[in-house]
Image (cartoon, rainbow, N blue to C red):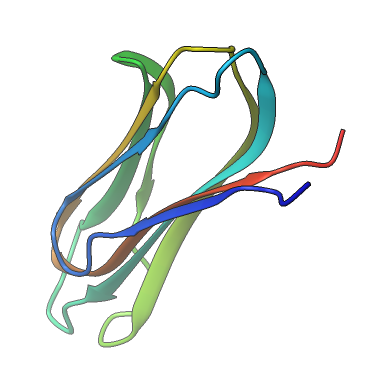
Length: 115
């Protein structure tokens, strides 16, 4: 059996959406990762970065932190295990928000686990 791997790279966009299609008669478990990387503006004072992860329209996780490293990069990551039921699609969405920074990369990945 080949394990599934799904990825959406939104680049510099602030929303990454991924649909994991339902499998006929088989539930699967995935390791889900959302990764946000921003460029913090050199003159940024009081800036922040925020990442929100939703599964099937429901907020699963959200975090807002002050930005660090003016003139450099900063980031947020989220990881969880996700079960996709048989015959049902699963919609994952990661949303980025920032002040005093620009999104450099927003990626959502789902790797099926062997168990």
